[in-house]
Image (spheres, rainbow, N blue to C red):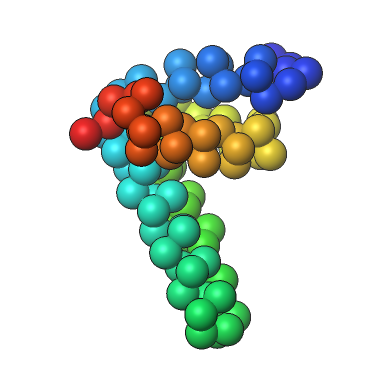
Length: 100
C-alpha cells in the first residue's frame, strides 16, 4: 500500500494501533524517547542516543507483536511511521485518542 501524503497514511496507521495496550506502549515509548532526548540536550552525553531506538522500538514493537499481532508500519513506511508515532502521542495527550 502506497501513500502520497501523511494525511492519507495516518488513518491506516491508526487502524494498525487499535489495541489499547499497543497504544499505551507506543505512548510510553515516545515519552521515553522524549525524556532521553531532553537528557541528551542537557548533558551532551552522546551515549544516551544509543537508547533512542531501544526505547522507541522496544515499546512499540512489543505492542505490535504481543497485542496487535501485526507487523509495525515502520518496516514499509519508516518516515510516515515516525510521524505517526508522534501524532498519535499528541492525539492521546490531548484526549483525541483513548489509551488510558
